Image (cartoon, rainbow, N blue to C red; front, side, top):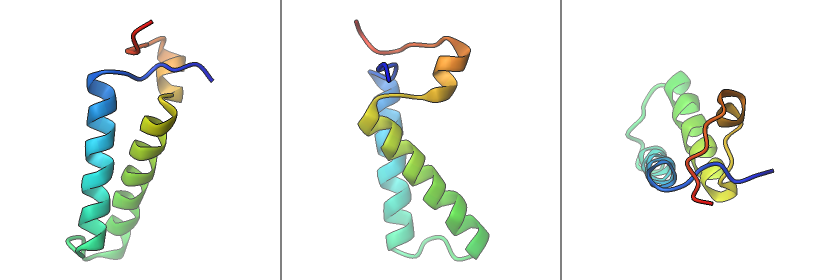
Length: 67
């Protein structure tokens, strides 16, 4: 998998992933369906920032990583 996430995107994904985990840990999200949505945001954000790869970017031909 080629790296295609960098710069602002990387910071954005990491920040929202961490904020989502904090929201779940402090019980800021009360209803069950929203907990799953926030957990999905946290997982996808942190996973894509760790791998520095975004599959929708590949499909759309976007690359924000510096070469």
